[in-house]
Length: 236
Image 1: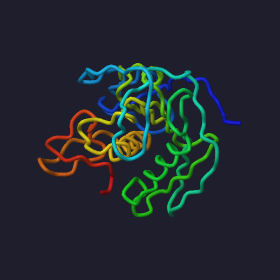
Image 2 (image 1 turned 90 degrees about the vertical axis):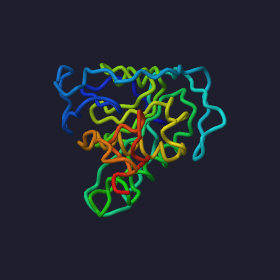
Image 3 (image 1 turned 90 degrees about the horizontal axis):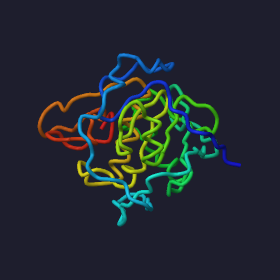
């Protein structure tokens, strides 16, 4: 049976579009002076609409997104050994019930991204193993309503992803719709996984280093890539 847990917001938060990240490790209090209580610098103007369609790769024909799921997270079952060398980081993949996505396919996309040679394990720095038990990193895909609750006190409006404690919280709004900053939906998905897991691993935001250059993966590319070029990888 799939493991199910009632959602509870973590004690520290880190937003795609927030301030400086808290240090990796045990959660701090919600009053920590890490930029955690600031709101995103720009409010999205689109509103989620009922129903959802999720596809792999190219941008889906339908970009409608269900506003809310059931409010419960399902852990994708199974254990997959780390394929590379270096210290092992365990990852648990969880999906909110009611989000229209193939859970196993989502987990495979997450792990394929993290174990790509261009990701955080580059050069043997680390390797990622998937588990359905307690893990170093939780990658969560949740509806706009639930992701907004998980990311509080940050105001994500359900349209921005965040780091909350050891959770990389991805909103289904962007998983389905992507962002105009990324022409390819698959590349955006790789970016948001690497970016939010990067925060859990202790990496902070970076700025565009110059016009025409690849954006650092820790740049807030969901909001704006220019004058850099889109980039999904820590080590492209």
